[in-house]
Length: 330
Image 1 (cartoon, one colour):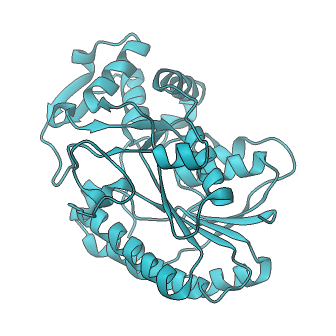
Image 2 (cartoon, rainbow, N blue to C red):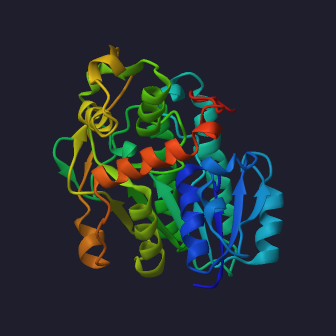
């Protein structure tokens, strides 16, 4: 792995956190994102001290693919990590064509351009367990796709296309599917930072469907470590699940945040209708990465929530000026 790598979607929570990890390992990082860099409190790679910084370019895979190709040809990154996607599940019902344009059409155009680049050693595709739909029990990487939302269908389509690129063109792809990530710097509309901010600001939190859906929540630092291990040692053409071995319902998660902040759950939450197509559970079996790459998660949910609360309190003056709800961009 050369010292020059690229992260597409570098302003996303997962992308920015992985950039932070790479900088701390001494890599030269090219960051590409369609939006300007947010405030430092929401940009984890800006927290790294030292002269080595992300070389950031504001480019959109929907509109700027030729410029992105020119940049790659000039800098020749050996590894390209793609975190870029229209990622909101519920909102994908409103404008599904936007999700399909970014997650399928433009993403496949990117793959077709990259398959001719001899400097590319590995393309790490950040996928999602949403492609599986609602599942019973723990599932491994061979689980059949059964997507239940436009977002999930769009991600499944790109994943299936990548399989054909690997089979026919030997495209050097490795895919990851992580459980629900969280941690310091996450977008404020996600459940953990949203709960923390709503408690601090005295706002009422809507708990969709009473919070009965079950999830595995994993700290982003554990995910970044796993992603790097997969990029270094993973088998080309394979997919790896990244998850903890424990799960909680959304209600239990919110109760844990309330407990950590000495807040009354009944005062904080109001139950609302569930969103369309929401999966009751997707529980990922992560034995493959644990056994083949000797990875394990290190940060407990309690530790991670405590760290996220501290981040929110430390950066409260900046965070309370930011939008608390998702704002859609076509």
